[in-house]
Length: 174
Image 1: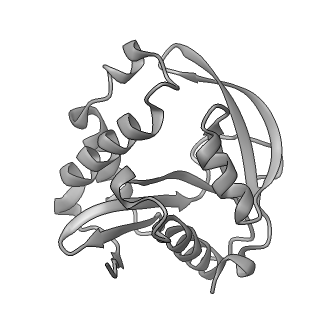
Image 2: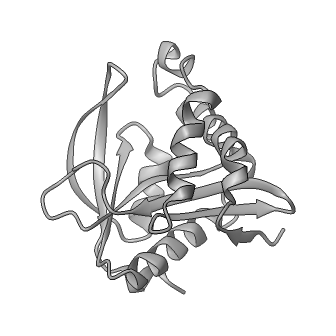
């Protein structure tokens, strides 16, 4: 499989929202409470995707296996402050479990880094649930530095989190 990488079109917002929800359910099974998982909804995610896809400065890249979106990254200016001195922020990066360990995540982060640098950015931070060891190991393998740990309030559910930063973006670009 050789994925194609491109910015989804505005018309793909609902498809991307469905992918987002599916990725959440796969990534967070056993990590987030079932009550929170039950709230994951395509209809609630679609407006966020429309907003991101309508913002030309937002870095939005999806990976496609043939014509099916299988992963994505959203990055750019921080929409929420996660640590002092934050430059750029990876708001989301997810891949379907069926497509783990194929290099898609690494490529998506490299493309986000490349586009953020082209916009004048210097670094990219991201938050991850502390119990998501697979994701934390992946970010650390790419050179992300742990900045802090704390608690993230996700719709009224306090979850332990970890904040990382990629400080040397050119190293992420092959």
